[in-house]
Image (cartoon, rainbow, N blue to C red; front, top):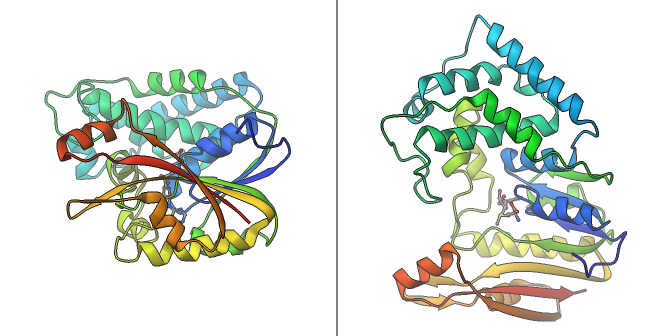
Length: 309
Ligand SMILES: C[S@@+](CC[C@H](N)C(=O)[O-])C[C@H]1O[C@@H](n2cnc3c(N)ncnc32)[C@H](O)[C@@H]1O
């Protein structure tokens, strides 16, 4: 980020929870994000639209808590969240869900984050990234309203610059991005082992908010059969929106298929319409990927592919 000239326009076509769009703003860049998962878009919007006054955020949350407490008709949760939360924590979450649509972007994102934290806490903080959803008894009571109050305080860091995040499928990114308008594209695209972005914590949140998980999943690049074609469509469109001389920075990983490790950078290079490229490679250390490698006797690496138009 620090090497990208200030004032450049940076696009992340798979922006997830908004790391790139948010960090880019801190470095004085104009950032644009796209994601086809509504939760990702809410989390990103929460990061880039932080109100300038903390007092306003505090007032908003306190008013939400009071109104939630006064509510007479509390929506019933479905079976899945009932199995995961302490009854009292879930009651607070469901009460507040009634006011979800009217929350500010920042509080909305913190509300979702607090649901994830509370779910883990109710299960005695025993979930790891791969065991989210495991039923651990007895359930521990986590005061949800307090979690939310702490969260809005912890992440409150307004940045003056503006950014835009689109809820869109990147295979249609030309609907929202003009040709030759982007200086840099910086992204971690969906992994080609097709990690399910609608599982884990996302699944709990879809259930609480009444989103159709299967429908969301079907709109994501998630299916290994079509992965190559889908990525090719996106790369061709990225080429068109990039200014001449502009660069794409893609962070990709290797994949093991039928016992053979496929090099991520080579795989992506074969799909790309760009002629000029370079690759930076690094090993995984101290991450869950390293643990995966130890179990599977593989030596996968992460590559950063840089294409220039
Ligand atoms: C590796 S993650 C990006 C993580 C991100 N850098 C972050 O910090 O959270 C890939 C993202 O691609 C999104 N995605 C998958 N298919 C998509 C599509 N067709 N259009 C737009 N986004 C998509 C997923 O929802 C997921 O958020």
